[in-house]
Structure formats: structure tokens, C-alpha cells
Image (cartoon, rainbow, N blue to C red; front, side, top):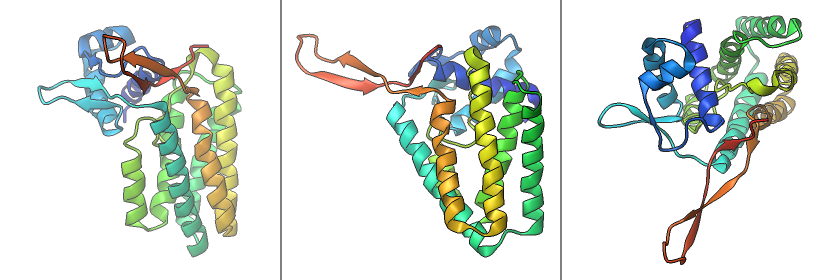
Length: 247
């Protein structure tokens, strides 16, 4: 994915996560392009990608709307990813990763080290870290050699923000974001060490903990909105909506 297009994908994720685009809202290319300060082309190319991630839904009449989802669905999907990726990592460790695979994982580590070496985050780090993280997790999942596991992780990744590459930065507090992602990258190092040592149980536990940290990095808050469904004051239903503090 080209740099500008990747940044647009990340920014739209952030807008949905922060409530700037709400569930059920139609996404209009012209308005979104104006808001992001880009042409319509990268927006048009970003929307199908976000639909594949499960964040948007494509309408039969063309166009996209923001998908409705709950914080609990996202958190459950992140936990499921941790379990499945942990199983993939354990399988890989027990069968022994190839030298080429380990080299590719170390390339990811070096890429991440370069991002964090300067001690702060800049705008271009969003897509750079996201692509590195996507590659890191993909290497482990596909390195395990299980199509069943890979397919299960791909399906689970259709829940919004559950996939490893679904990075959304908190621009209001980049220092806190730096600390969160730097901690996650140190976990990358520990995971590679465990794989290299053939420590199956340890790497499975590390992968689960690594996925769990995603909840912090996207600043997930469990808020419940009460929606009145009976104008006469009868039954009241509750719907959880994704909401993040704007700190």
C-alpha cells in the first residue's frame, strides 16, 4: 500500500474509533477527502480496504456506511486473535522455524527499532509501523503451515480493530502512544527469542499478552448508550457503541 493511501486508511480508522464517524453513518468521499486534506482517489481506494477489515459495510446501491459494532465484540475478537496467534507461534516454535523465516522476523525487528530509535512518533510512523506489524504477524501465522489457523485468524480479523495491522494512533497523546507501541515492539523481540529457542508454551503466552495490549493502544473504553425504543416509556434496550476518550 502506498504511503499516502496507508495514512488515509489509518486516519479513517482513527475517525471511527474517536467517534468522528459514527455507526450507521454513510461515508461520503468528497466530505472525507476535504476533512483529510487529500484528493478523492486515496479515499476511494481506502474504503474497500476498510470494508475488508469489517470497519465499513458496502451498500448494494454503492457507497459505504460505518459498521455497527460494540466494544465487547472488539475486545473478544482481540482475545480470540491472541489465542489463535499463540497456537500458531507455538506450532512454529515446536516444528522449528527456518533460517529464512527467522531472518525475515529480524528484519521486522530492525524496522521497528529504527522507528523508535528517535524517541518520538511522527505522522509517517503510522503506516510504517502498521506495515511492519502486519508483516511480523503474517510471518508467524503462515510460518506455522496451518491453513485452518490462517483462515480462522483472517475471519476473526474482520471484526473492526481486531486484526494485527489495524493500527489507530492516539494523536492527542503521542507520548503515551509511543510508550504503548514501544512496549509492544519489545514484546516482538521476546517473541522472536522464544521462537528461536523453541519455547512453544512461552511464545504462546507472549502472543496472547501481545494481542491483549492492543486494547490499551486503541484506548478502548466500555461505554453503554441507552436507546429508548418505546415512546410510551416502556421497554428500554441497551446498545454498546464504540467510544474512545478524546484525552
